[in-house]
Image (cartoon, rainbow, N blue to C red; front, side, top):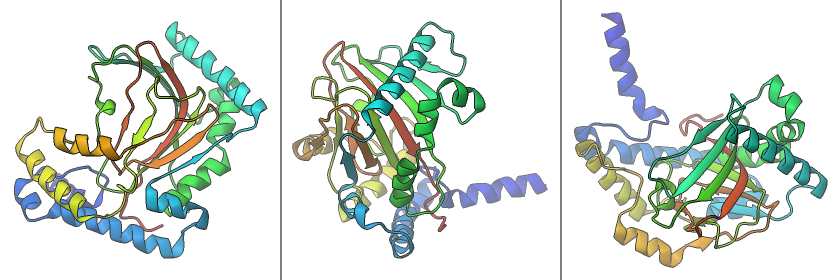
Length: 290
């Protein structure tokens, strides 16, 4: 009896978590998802009074910030060497910590390595471990979240383009969730149009009536249609986004941080092209103040 009540309580309070959607037509019809969206924006606004960096003002407004020549040349080369060692070990199946996502019928070969905070990685890959603990990167995420403490994760990513059929999800316009959330990349290869640069709609991270309507419509449709992907755009909206997108062509050793609550996608790449990066991400509860 107690466990049943506890489970019901947990389900009821899902709206105060990072859960992307609430699977209830009635609650969504009466605007629960809109309430979650507005409440998260309001709390983020309030947090700005306590923790808001002047250097991040353009980030708060536009949803992205890019820095060239982020690392020293010496450190960059050492990190790239360790990155390649991990990828090669993973390809040969000798690295038990690596995860290789080879999606069947996918337009990409996506090799990733979740870099864990442990002694083995600290000893074997000291430069990558140092990057994981880099205070400058952590400070960017603190400022982006407007919180003193954030849970930051790091992964190594190699994206190899198999074809131009665009049948991998991230190549389509989408948002990650209904609230502000952040990702960053240190690029180890040049990122040009040919190898799929990051695409973003400037300012789409901010509160807007159009986004409010879009969230409401998607929340209702998602509660009716189990196959509906709530955070992906339809053809008409995708076309509009393509007309106003920013495409981030950048040199290797560039740092890019983006609010992936805004509309974004992986750019279209030419077959055989490779994009290497070290990525960072967090998914903090939007309703927690500090």
